[in-house]
Image (cartoon, rainbow, N blue to C red; front, side, top):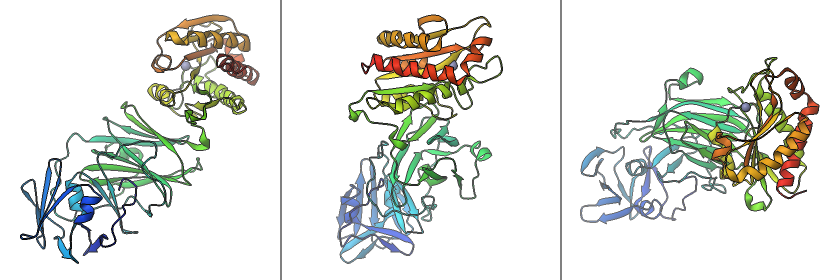
Length: 449
Ligand SMILES: [Zn+2]
């Protein structure tokens, strides 16, 4: 349940009766946590939780749920002094999501309140193996409640160890890690595949499919399926090459993002070292400014950031995180949120400007007053390391400098609309120098030099 193995009592094993998984009422009570009443005379089991009451009678193939009669795939049975009830029926009526892996005969239960988080769900070997895509079916004749206002999953993308799920409504995904083999499961309740999904992704007759991942060694495959109809749930599974930490970013901005924290590049603040977030502006579908010779700003920004990274790697007194390390689109919200969630000490965004053909030089932008001392230090090094004219420290309401909660600056390292600036900006020498200036500025501000 929620990725953890339930400890079933010795005489309380789950049993498979004619294709229906049956569970002792004692387990329903002790492990699932529902109230259970047993009336011996009428051999009636009453299971209650919040506003749902299920009544089941031994050997009777129907049950009542809040007074409404529903068919059962299998009647409850009395066996060795304990009553067994159909697990799927009871769980689903109580709002749990039920998955069934036919290969390993494993039932997965997910509670609706199971919080999403940083992999705290599952540790150790739960004995879960095989496919998570097994269609759970609905052979019990239970009427599926009408599902309205379902969120549409529009697409799935994976790049730079970042899984992005595009949705058309706010969703509350449930993310957890399973072992044997290692994988990260993302369940999106109250969701379905949007029509646009199938235009970019293959979906088979069972509303399932997968993408092979070849470029990133940590992930082998991403699978997706309509995992449950009741409630309608989309399941996405990242098959991993080993155990990996992850973080969930769900800003309710149309994207659910799962970042794999590989190479421990997402250090926790527990290390006691200052944490620096470096942000390469734009990326992916967002090219940023286009230079006079038709080069893209996003590539320049990333190139400089990679050089900053190489320098920061050698610094033992601080930790750093990049908002992107490849040519991938990241929303402004996620850039700020990443830094805020990590409780970073400083945030530096690298950009290049565009304007008139004669405009030339460097600028440092900030939004919040508390960023001014940091902006002043960073600008001093930017002017020196770029060798370009000083266009001053400037206040401006920019998303990443406004929405972050630590000293944050946005550096414009030159003008792509200016012929001579542009020619200089794309040289290794300039980029190495500016990268060194960025690192020197950060170190001075943090008192590390
Ligand atoms: Zn830019």
